[in-house]
Length: 218
Image (cartoon, rainbow, N blue to C red; front, side):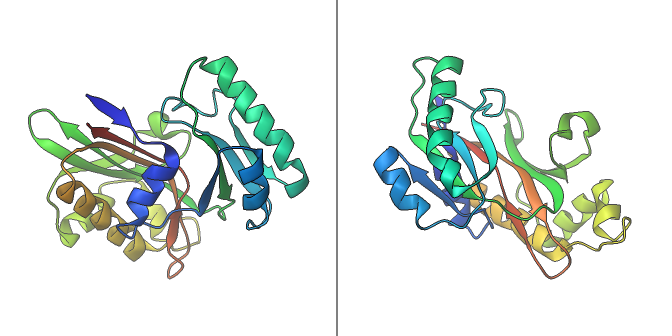
């Protein structure tokens, strides 16, 4: 039997392997929300935290650029929209997340093939990932050279190299892919990983994952 982790647990899992993720906190109720708000820098992103609501935007459960004085109202709206979209779904609370600076949108993923095992993926990310289908795949395990060759198989690579006037942090992306690969190899219960988008910044400035999904076998 498979299950999805909620987004906060997925991010913590990835962060434990050094994958750079946007800072996130959970508010299970209004009391906890007020405490967390004192520790955040604004504006923030707010989303429903539930392993049973995967399509948060479609559910009306994602709000960006939230100011401190708006947070309580948004908290209520998220929980209300979640209840209407998926009655009976288990909701762990609301995720409060830093608004990471925008960068080049990359998708990093892994899915297990029934015959060949875990397959690592990288390519152009964002909301149009299904339209562009610009991804490269490799069976695990992979070496650093193999990951570098993966990137060169995508149109994403020419953008990383400065096709739009900005050269992006290829080294950070390679390192992140290797960290994801290591996580998968050390945790065979992981069936699927989806980091989309990971914002890749200018050369030397790293990257940061904004959304994450992990499915595990119980």
